[in-house]
Image 1 (cartoon, rainbow, N blue to C red):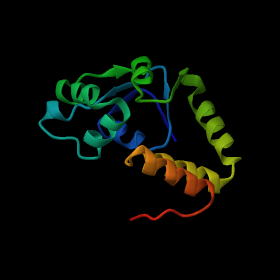
Image 2: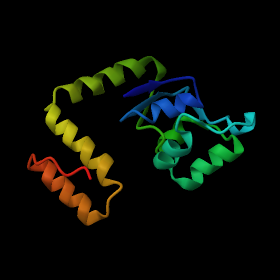
Image 3: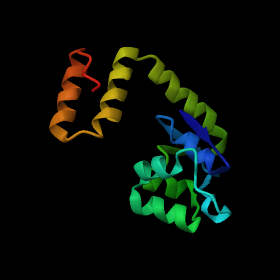
Image 4: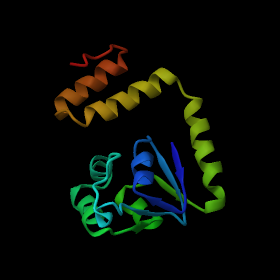
Length: 141
């Protein structure tokens, strides 16, 4: 889980989007300034941002150096939740604590179903989910 505030630029976005959930303070601003500096994002920005917000929005951010505030980041799916800055860590810790009370094998299976299933056709994704629900480790090949 990532808890972010202030300027979340370049590698900051890339690291945050490698987390399962992103909670942002109201003051957060997100951007990918690398192209304006004559470089390509090299920590995953060209891959994580499109997966989070879609191809068109990602290209707009990447190619025009357009920054988004926390409200827009929530609207486009860049973050999961926006909270007042003084509640950021408390909110993130609360969510992490709730998750930690759940069965870790179930959490693992849900994460596998989502992350692996997105790359599969629906019928195969549903089969993956079924196998995970039954506790059968699906083939990774």
